[in-house]
Length: 290
Picture 1 (cartoon, one colour):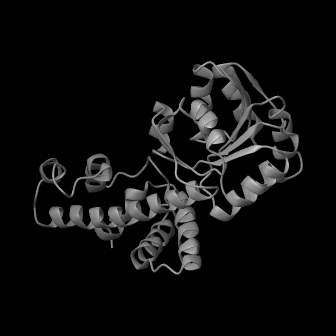
Picture 2 (tube, rainbow, N blue to C red):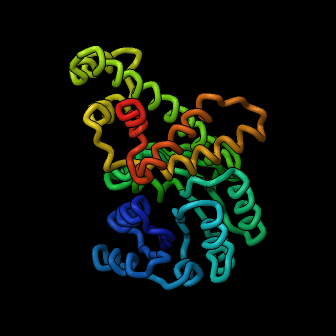
Picture 3 (cartoon, rainbow, N blue to C red):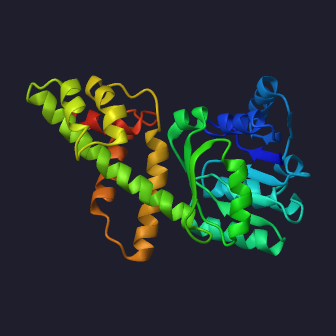
């Protein structure tokens, strides 16, 4: 069992840290809103720290799951940040969905201090975090560092794979979000078409989900899309953040992504009608309520 610090107790981090505690690791948590960290301790035991630097004292592994690039830099590299306080030989694992640039920046900062680093964005949503079945996409310049980190990540993952050097985890997460964006728009149009044609959406989904059109989104979101229910799941504002990262990287790589850019504009319209925290399946609202 390892000494682990977990930095960031949002809807994903809170249950992920809980799985580490349940697996027998010794866990110290940090959250910018201290009350959330104390709530976690009251539920799981272990301990909380008031700063990232204090949280990582003595830690073998430091898991981080915060909001965006700026948050990553602040928590890892800012005043009272984690990296400067970590002990030589420890490993930083960043579960934040951020840019590949910030992943490579952290990798360099960790290498300067003889620390391991893994960029390890996650997929599976809040339910995946709560049930400990996340998909973790990893980048690291050191296979041994990844192997050791995976033994800890396994507490809350169903799939954890090394996909290349530092930054590869983040670029893989971009691929994930690009695929989901186009899929959800197609599913929105399909469900709306079925409704307009007078078909039973449940029957249609039950039938076509067993064929080439089948997907996780179809099986888990088509029925709620048809009902206009979006008060759950992965928020539109988070998806727009992720798509902005992907579109910027695509521009750098010279890759054309017209469908992704279009869907991002659709999400912008969803936010304009009050859907900032709606699930990403709310694209259908633009068709149902034009």
